[in-house]
Length: 305
Image 1 (cartoon, rainbow, N blue to C red):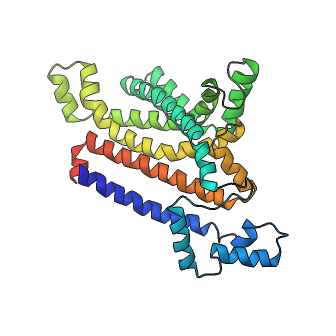
Image 2: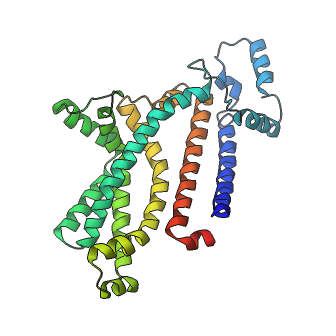
Image 3: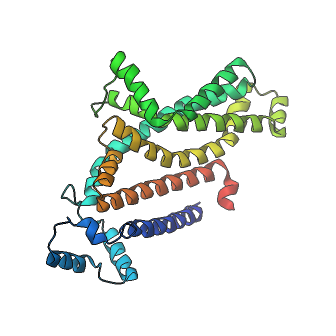
């Protein structure tokens, strides 16, 4: 198991190396980085000194090595708009985004599992059709539209939840539902399809012929084997949840990394954007590593291969 985890960790480091190249390229895709990082009225002598200080007068490979040497120490430069170090600025918003992402993931899993299970056990019944219709609507609704609808109904009309901000658990409910609705639909559909495929296998018929109850067959035989693609989807959904958090945080004025990113893009604050992309990529790599470990627990053939 240790060698399996080490292999997956090496794959994650390769991914982070590729991300570092893309993050470095952000400085150069829009032209001269000095023109982006400094105000337009900066004196020429200040521009020349800044260019030399940041190493922008050196060849690109040397600039990349200089960027990596600073990035591994957590130094992405100073935010032009906030006048402070970029990485601590992003990390200060990270706990709020993790709370929102965790709440959205919990909402999607807690609703998707019983929905997918019920749809598979009652295939081609009104219950199955109702769940599939609800799942289709959940996947089709745009995030910003759903957020505005939830605000209009549950915040403005009913007054159950606050419209914006981060004041306790009630402030998490509407953003979490907004962010988690798409993942909920995807997980429910995948679990239903996986369970239907597993329930048609020969070993399920054998388990039933031994006199096992439907509950025992489902929990001890069908659900574990159908869980592998669901675990895969969970790992992939973390990236979607972080991306959806950007929209939800902006609509609900939630003080997380996503709202900071929108502000940084508007101000062309490249150090903050670079720090955001690096932190987000690291989170996704760590989640994928956890998913790979879960693979090895669910199916020993995966880690042995």
